[in-house]
Image (spheres, rainbow, N blue to C red):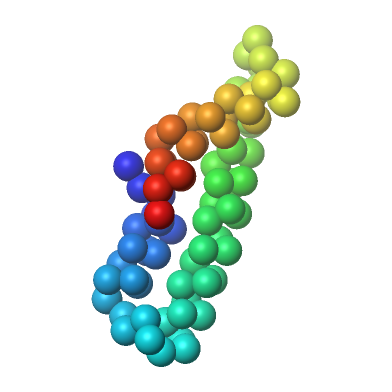
Length: 76
């Protein structure tokens, strides 16, 4: 499964001529937004998990593990 930003990055790379400056700038911007997307998803998971038997730190760690496994963040 891919995040929306991962899908957008894939689409840009497949659709736009990457030998031009503008598509490369778009690619760089999307890549920079991938980390923000992850942070937002993990923050949401921590908020949802409040009141459970986990501390915020434990929820954050768990959210990152789930995010990384779900969205295959090691793949390029």
